Each structure stands twice: as structure tokens, then as C-alpha cells.
Length: 284
Image 1 (spheres, rainbow, N blue to C red):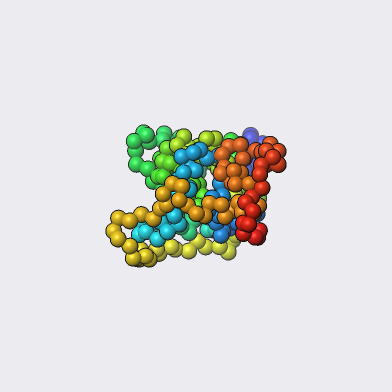
Image 2 (cartoon, one colour; image 1 turned 90 degrees about the vertical axis):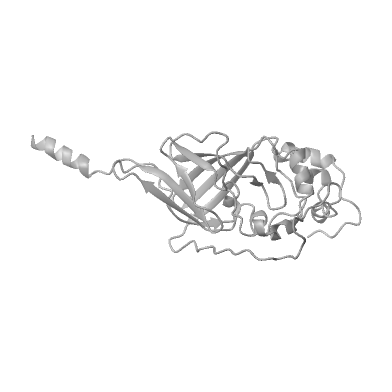
């Protein structure tokens, strides 16, 4: 009897096995794609992006001045793009008071809305339900990896040079924690603007001294223009599309993106392509 009591006491005192805890303050690490994530990609740089012709046309006609519009000034990044920004990240958790299991994670960045990731097996809303910047996210555990599926995203962008992402896109993420390091693999599937899924990974490091500050954004009239004018370029009129190709001595056709530019085999095709235009600007 005494032995049984001792065993029962030990079982009560032993903590139960739990999944990985992603909560904490996470600082971005720019070991991957720093030029894209901080200064931003060049106009016409679609290398390695599996876009289709519709996305390419949207990128070619994009004008950066659109970001001066009042509707754009305080616009948050979307759930799929916010990982790529330079902002710090805070992840908090919701715990059921009875079962003490994690029922949701909340992710927030400097320029974002609160993004809830549900772990309680709730279904996604019907297709016609409201779309938001954060979308609707549910998750399941694959071992120690948290796999998140997001639908109902508002239209957004793949990159900060005009490449679009439609509101029909879905996002699958794999959250992976190794000690103080967090890696997120994000896979965007978009039947409107992508010919194949677009995969990116992003890294963060735990920072115990970090605090995500508030973002009190205010709208101002940055540019005086007639009401209703939307900055854009007509198809075939963008004079800057060759600058990236010329500066980096890359064949122009390669800069146009598409699924084949993602794969290592494309390097053999590059060797057979023509060189950049003569008399182009000096390489950086």
C-alpha cells in the first residue's frame, strides 16, 4: 500500500508531456534575403518567384507612389508577408483553465494586427466569409512542428515591388523551434497569380529584453493629387524594368520570374542566354 501511495505521489509531481511552446519575444535575424527584407527588391526583379503572366503584368505596371495614398499609409502587412518585414515579433498563448492545454497562439508585429492561430479544431469559415489582413488560421501538431493553415486573406503582395497576391490564396506555415531559434517556413498557393507554390523561410532569435512598441499611425496628405487618381503605369510604358538586369549583368529574360527560375537546372539555361544590353549602367 505504501508503495502504491509513493508511486501515485510521483506521478502527480511529474510534469505532463507538452508540445513546443512558441510564446516569447522574438527578434528577426536577416541571415536570409536581407536585401529583399530591409531595403527592398528592385523594380522588375522577379527572379526565383513562380509568378504567372497576370502577376508579371501587375508588377510591370506598379508605381511605388501608390503607397502615398491615404488608404495605404496605415495598411498593415498581411499574414503571409509580415514574416518578411524587419519588425520584432511577440507570440503569446491562450491556455484552457481546466485542461491547461494551449488553445491558441497570438502573433503580433510592429506593423500588424493581432493574428490568432487556433488549436481547438474549429472549422474554417465558408468561402464567402469576411477576409482580413491576418486571415483565419488553424493549426495542428506534426511532432514538434506546428503546421498552420490560413485562409480568408485580403489581397496583398508577394514582394514590395508590385508582385501581387490574390484573396483566393492560401497559406501553410511550419513553425519550428530549436532552443532559442525560431524558423518559419511559409508556403503560399495562389490560383490567380502563382503558377506553383511559393516557399520562403524566415528566422528569429529569442530576445528576453525585447518589447514590441506601439504603432500609432496617422494618415496625412503626402502628395497633392486630384481625388480618385491612383498612381500606376500603363502596360508597356515602364522605363525602369531593365535597370535590375543592367546593373547586375543578368539576362533580362531571367529577371521575369516564373517557376523554372526557382530550380538549380535554370543555371544551365542562363549560360545560353544573351548578355545584358551594351551601354547599360555600371554594375554595383
